[in-house]
Every structure is written in C-alpha cells, then in structure tokens.
Length: 241
Ligand SMILES: C[S@@+](CC[C@H](N)C(=O)[O-])C[C@H]1O[C@@H](n2cnc3c(N)ncnc32)[C@H](O)[C@@H]1O
Image (cartoon, rainbow, N blue to C red; front, side):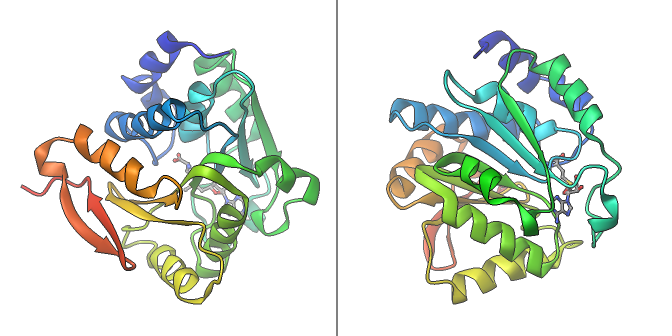
C-alpha cells in the first residue's frame, strides 16, 4: 500500500541505513520525478531491479509502487560463486527482507533468486511491461548485455531503464556493453534521454522527449547541460560548475 510518509522518510535519509551504492537523496528525487511523470500519464507496471544487494534501490521502487503494482528484485543473493566479477555481494534474501520490513513494511515486493542469465520463463513473464527497471547486477560485458536485452524486451510503453555504473571507471564494461548493444541490436525500445550521477537513463520512445522536458524543467540550472548520447538528444544531471 502506498504511503507518502514512509516514502518521504526513506528519501530524506532512511535510505542511508541500507547498505548499497546506487542511490542517495538527490538520485531518489530524480526517480520520484520519473514516477510523477508516469503517474500523471497513467503509466503503470512492475518496478524492477536486477542486482539488489541489500535493497537500497529496490526499497525505493517498492515505496513508489501504487495499488496493483509490485516491486520485483532479481539477484543471485547467497549464490555468490556465480558473481563472476565480484560486483557487490555478501548479501542474503533474509537481509533484504528485513530491510524491506523496516522501511517499506506494507509494500508488495517479490524477490527472485536467480542468475540473470537464467531467469525462469515464468519469472521473466512477471517483468513484462515494467515501468521502471534499475539494472545493476553483474558488471562485465556479457551479463550487462544480457540484462539490457531483458530490459529492452520487457519494457512497457512509457517505461524507463536506468543503467547503473555507466560512468564508473572501475566497471568499464558497463559502458562497452551499452554501446555494443546499441550498435548491434535490432530491438531498441528505449533510448537515452538523461545521463549523470554514474547512470544512463533510457526511456521508451512513446515518452522519451516529454519525459526529458519534464525532468529538465525540474533540475537546477547547473544540471541542465544538453548533450548527445548514442545519437540521441539528452542532458546531464551532473553539476557543470
Ligand atoms: C553492485 S551490487 C547491486 C547494488 C544495489 N543495486 C545498490 O544500488 O545498492 C550487484 C548485485 O548484483 C548481484 N549479481 C551479480 N551477478 C549477478 C547475476 N549474474 N545475476 C543476478 N545478480 C547478480 C550481486 O549479488 C549483487 O547483489
């Protein structure tokens, strides 16, 4: 059940109680703008994360979910032998569940314990027509391409994909994978509209230009530099002075 008070509490500081990397208060506000835009347009669907760690981002997605929507987190969790590039790790289903209980007790959340290379068909079906997916699982070329392909295939009209660590020099294969995907894949259902804060944001074609304008207007002047990414007009939310 949606709870504005719990959401505000999490965004304004609660999120720092959950170990993780992909979210701070500023980024959570950016996710909230995406959420507001989608709700104004009546866009609904699951909110998904590949690569959950202890749940820092997944809990925000759970708190943003409205009536009839579910947050879904996919991770190998305890099977860290399958974490080939040691991205994150040392997590457990139990720890994520206890963080959810603490910060998003009334939310509808499903955890799928699976390697993203081998998500069972019945679980993949649950991602269909998602409205937000945060991709932050394994960080080597093949797995990022796999995860981006899943995202591009299952995104709904009006959906958004957020690729984490796109600008992280410790994970150069994330950027390589996105470039390779865009240069080789015939299926491009979502394209860049915003970059920065270590992430690349892709929106489905139906909303790309309107969503870009919506968020652009809400950012301070020093976070509005126009750029082109993979041939698409975008802007950066990294401060420019
Ligand atoms: C960088 S951490 C995620 C951080 C989290 N999103 C956050 O922002 O705090 C990467 C996660 O991906 C998981 N992982 C690594 N390889 C995976 C794979 N092939 N399939 C599913 N999960 C994977 C790891 O277990 C780890 O929890």
